[in-house]
Image (cartoon, rainbow, N blue to C red; front, side, top):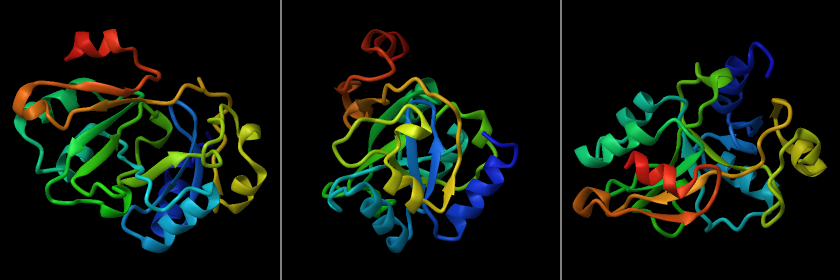
Length: 198
């Protein structure tokens, strides 16, 4: 991505815009998770039903943990062990933080912390979803993103060709109490690797 990617990205998000960017897995869309107007635009670009949840992405594990004080010590340790990585962690959200990202289950929060050095300087969280039309193929390259999505974004950051496998979704909602976890979507991080880390 271009040298000023982090600054341009943060400026776009702060202004209520929607950014199209290269994540660590596939191309994604991002916006301010606290802005109803920005979230509505992102969902509209994707053709995504407004009741479907999205993830909240932080660009650093320490920033994520500071924003999620409700996590217990066991879950916090798991987050520190697993992230940054191509994972989406489903976490308990008893304080109903970032409700616009939670869909019909406000007490569950999807967390992403990618390994993405180009955006490591971004200090604000974003609501993030893949940059495909709802139900479509996850885009590996900017050319794979539907033209209507590219044209509708306020900022486009080209990061070349990406791996193309979406994040693995791991359910940690019971981890604090029982140590149990499960994989809800197979993806970029293998189950055996998760088992080794947890």
